[in-house]
Length: 253
Image (tube, rainbow, N blue to C red; front, side):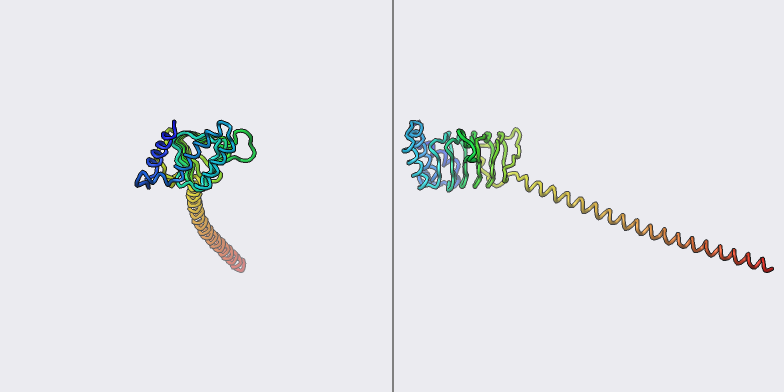
């Protein structure tokens, strides 16, 4: 695809994916548009071995846009970086088609690997604001990474990841549409666990209260039995005394 074709593609991507666009000319102001145009230039130079010039272009773009994309990264068509401030894409990152990244996203390495050090994002992946994906594993197609998550292991396709460290919430046989960019209404397994604990706490409280009532009832019954036993013993003692007294009277006669 030629330079003009790339510009048209970036225009289309931003207009389709950002509802804030009111006129086509606004696209020219978007950091995502400017950085992707510069990335395509730098990547071509990088592949031809012009590493210094490629890095010079990418670093210049990073200073102007706040988005740092290493020219060695391999990026498919339709990448949209919304807002963009603080986004970092490492050298060996591979990004598929129609991927969406929000501000503060890091596609980085762990510092312990060599060679392929950065993640691979398959088609239609969405990475929400502030999320970190660290390591040379794959995020499956149509998956979502929740805001602020830290992902350290592979994610299957059609899944959602939330939390620190990231936890997968499976969505079997349910694909995430390309235009689905909702960062808010994501499953939260931590909150689900809290709700489970709350329900368990309520159940235990109810059982303890029930046991307390049963124990009180047992104590009342035990008290009644004790009084009945004492009364029976007292009556028996009185009968013995009467019998003894009567026997003594009979002897005196």
